[in-house]
Image (cartoon, rainbow, N blue to C red; front, side, top):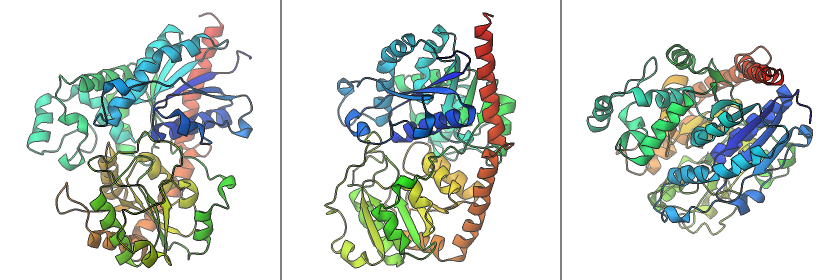
Amino acid sequence: METTKSHIALLASPGMGHLIPVLELAKHLVSHQSFKVTVFVVATDHASLANTHLLQSPADSGDLLDIVLLPFIDVSDIGGPSVSFIATIVTTVLRSMPFLRSEISKMEFRPTALVVDLFGTDALEIADEYNMLKFVFIASNAWFLAVMLCTPEIDRKEIDEHVKNRKPLHIPGCKPIKFEHNLDVFFMDTNDPFYQGYVEAINKMSLTDGILVNTWDELEPTTLKALRETKKVPIYPIGPLVRPIEKSVFGNEILAWLDKQPKQSVIYVSFGSGGTLSAQQVKELAWGLELSQQRFVWVLRPPTENDAAGTFLALGNGSDATLDYLPDGFPARTQDRGLLVPMWAPQVEVLGHPSIGGFLTHCGWNSTMESIVNGVPMIAWPLYAEQKMNASMLTEDIGASIRVMTVESDAAVGREEIRSVVRKILVDRQGRNIRSRIKELKDNAANALAKGGSSYNSMSQFANICIQHLKTKASGA
């Protein structure tokens, strides 16, 4: 292996929402920068992950991309089913550190830089040990990043006012956070080990060589300007990084069904790789889709009570074909205009199909980026993590979505509301206005990634730093 080529190591924490953007970053570094890239994957479900195509290096990557699945970590001792998926991720990544260190120490050509996500900041110590540059990749937006970076500096009294009295939480140079868009971390006691770990991770991020973020300058100009002015750590907006449409997927029965539908006539319903609904909510959604009288593709998962992220750490394509949790007769009554898909669908290919006219989404950032890149207007239905912030930005600031509303924050979204928003996005004037706006965003995103665009230039800056560091090491400086 020649030592004149930069070698980047990426660490992907558990969950499809973390793995997919890391893999896309890796592919981008190989195809656009000709870097050698090694992706270290931490997973909680090895068997299911092995059955996907995700761990296969693209044919056109040659020997430049290696994907290494780190050994399975048993975290059964930290609690039962009530343990949050965040706690599981944090513990799994932490216990994987010895294996990551071992893998890097065995490399003949060690990485020039190590890139981790929010959950992988403990690995930054390994970068220091081997004189590697260290970066953090935030697979979300700049507003979420700004909130994270500001958390240690916000007066606790302001957070208490925000939580107890529901007052907006002000973030320097950025849009305030309304109470209804809150992050769970602000409800934690400052003595909670997870809160302390969160703050420690943010402090480590602030001491890195830079933060890569999956957004672009034209999408969030005000927030990115504030980040650059108020933070010492360099910010590199390099998005949107999304999985491209794969020709090998064509022939899929979902796409074959879509081929028979009129242009922009179908609402695609999916709550991402981790989102789940209660039994009552699944029934209300079914009734709402039926009442809308519109065509739909609905990716279904069995209901889960009191856990909106119930399948976040589950990987693979699995299936549950029973569908006995739907209203009686629903599949038969809607078979002429609806397609029910158990567990999984090729989302990028579905969103890229001309028959799709809208996307009812949980507002995970990967799904959001895929929708914008394919020019599909959204119905925002956030479930957990920063998704309420994403929904707020999409609806109030960007104009790319409409949002479902409930009478009470913890109540199910009613069938009439679902009927209304589906018709608005597919049929009514409001949907046409959002479609026009999202076409602008689609072009805007493509321009950012094109040569000379803002994200292209930002990625080039990151690449040049890595190249210069390699030259410095080679000269013995």
